[in-house]
Image 1 (cartoon, rainbow, N blue to C red):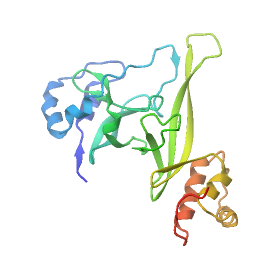
Image 2: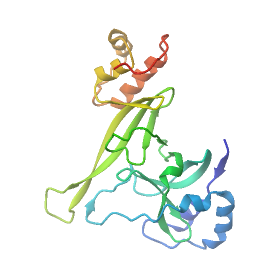
Image 3: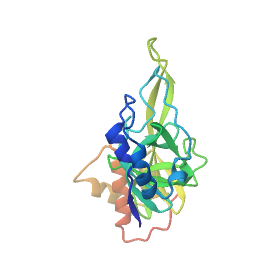
Length: 242
């Protein structure tokens, strides 16, 4: 797979900050930027990103509110050191424009995958349209294989209960899915996941005996271990058991 260093990070770290400082000599970098990014126009054509009003408490982004370098995969080409933010409320991937000093939406349909600075990998999946928060289809890939464990992170704006400077606040949620050959199965209960994967309850109990986990408090790790247990099974996986 072709991997290209994305020079947009230079603009971010050399001349831009959250306080709105002007990028220093951006034109001197433009030719290099365009040379390194053959899909330059395709990438930035998603439109401007509007920041949330100041009277909203919190932020719509996943984990952090400032750009950090990540990896962006478009049309099977990976670009490293890309300044990225993920708006988990609107399900948008955002980068920084080196010339106009503005947040820019990346066209969601062009993005195959992106990796944030904390190592979280998000991929664009199709086929879960009945799910309310599917939006543009970006899910974190927690376990990647024939059977995948996907997490949908999303934020919802809710009215603030107490009167003050804020009128609304961002509240974060996560939903878990098992995925195989394009099929999504939402999971919220331990017994449900065990059944879907076709696992034996006694074998599951035995495998967790030496290292027990509370399902509700450690849902991601618990489900990942269940998927790994199914992968390690001698029996061929023939699809989810309803």
